[in-house]
Image (cartoon, chains in turn green, red):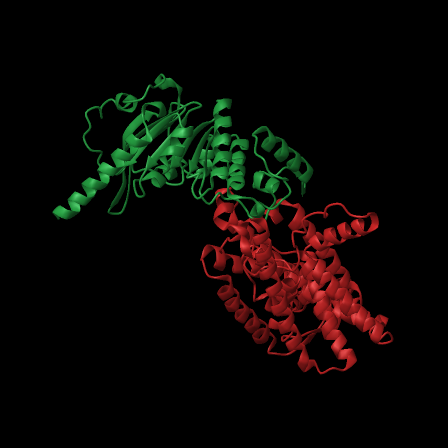
Length: 279
Length: 351
C-alpha cells in the first residue's frame, strides 16, 4: 500500500483547502504549515494527507482517536521522524526536519508525555539540562537556581522550591516544568503531547492556566494533542480533528462544540460497526 | 533501565520534612541539625563506619590503633577498594557495570614491565602507557556495550577473561619484580606507605566534585535515571558511557600499578574479581542504586572504609575470616533493603 494522497477537489491549491472552515488570518502569518503530509510504516498507513497550519500566537488543538495518527504527526512536526511525502513550512520557508536538534534550532520543541525529566535531579538542574550555566569547569548552580526561580515565577508556575527533586513533584507541576523548560530554551512553536492526560482537576487547571499565560504573551504558538474535547475547547483557539490519517474538521473553537465533535466520532464508530457486521 | 521514582536509592535520605513546628531553643536547634545531617545521603554509612572504627580502636587500642595497622588498613586494604569503587559508582549511576576492572588491574603493571624491560621504553613513559592501556580497555568495553549493544555485564565478563588470560599467558604465570628503573616514580605511586591512601583521598575529592558539580556528573545521572529523556534533552548518552568505562579503566590500571609497587612484585593473579566485587559492595553500601540514576562517591569511600575495617579488624581480633562473607552478605542485603524501603517511604510521603 502506498501513501498516495487521495483526490481532493482543491489538491492543486493547498492554501484553499487549508483555509477551509476556519476564520483564518492571512497566510503569511503562519509559523508552521504542513502540506499533504503522508507517512506509512511498512503496510500500515499512518498519515494519508495531512494539511495543517498554525498561526503565530495561536493554540491549536489536535484531536482524534487512538490510532488516528496524532503521535505520528507530532513526531514528524518535531523532527523525530521524517514524512514520506508532503512538505513542512516553518515561518513560510520549506524545510526538511532532519532531527529533533534541527527542529529545536528552528524553535520547534516537543514536550513528550514521558516529559524527559530526570526524576533524581533538582528542578533547576532539569530546567538547564544540557544547557548548564558554567563557571568552568564547575556548574554555576547559583546562577541556574536564580534564573530557574525567576523564570518559573514569571510563568506563574508554583512550586515549593527549585531545589527539590523532580520526583517529589505532582504530575501537573512536572508537566509545567517541562513546558517552562521548552519555553525557556526559546521555543517558539510548542508541541504538547497529551499534556492533560491522567491528571486531576487541580492539575489540569495548573496547565490550562500556564497555556493561557503563554497565549497572552503572544510569541509562542502551541499545538496540543488531546483526547478530551471539553478541555481542548477550553483552551484552544482552533480545533483540528484527525481521522484515518486525514484532518476531517478544522474549525475555530467558538464555532464547534463537544456535542458536534462527539457526533462526528460516534458516527465514525457506527460506520465501523456496520462495516464489521457486513463482512 | 526503568525510570520509576521508587528506586531513588540511597541508604538514608528520608525527606526530613524540615524543622518541626514550634520548639524550645536548643532542642529544636539540635533536632534541626540532626535533620540536616540525616538528609545527607552518606549519613548512615558514616555512622556505621565511625562505629566500627571506634569499636575496634577502643577494644584493641595497641594493635588496631597502631601506626602500622593504620597503614595496612587505609593504604593496603582500603585504597584499592576505594579507587575501584569510584569507577563503579560512576558506571552504576549511568546504568552499567564493569566486571573486568580487576583484570585491567592485573595487566597494567605487566604492560609497564614489558615496555620498560623488553622494549626499553623510559620508566615514566612506560607508566603513562600502562595507564593509557587501562583507558583503552575501558574504550573497548564502551565500544562493545554502547556501539555493539551488548549488556555491560556480558561485555566485561568476556573482556575480563581475555585480560586474565593476557596476564597469565604473557607472564607464563610467573610473578616479576618491579623493574629498577621504575622504582623512583613508584614511590610516588604506591611504594611509599601512605601514597596509596593519599591517592585514594585525592581521587575521591576530584570525582566527588565531578559527579556533583560538573555537567559530566549531571549527564551521568540523567543517563542512568531516564536514558530516553536524557537523549531527548540532547545529551549524548553513548559518549557518557564510553567516558565512564574509560575512567574506570584508568582507575583499574592505576590500582594495579600501586599494588605492584607496594608489594614490589607484579603478580599475574593480583586483582581479579575480589577487588571489583569489594568495590561494588562499597558502592552499594554507600548508597548507589544498582538500577542507575543515583549514587555518591563519598558514600562509596565510607563504604570501602567500613568493609576494610571489618576485614582488618576481624584479622586482628582473631575471629575466623570465614565469617567475613556472611557479614558482607548481610551488609549488602540490609543496605539494599534500606534503599528500596526508604525510597518507597519517600514516594509515599510525597503524595
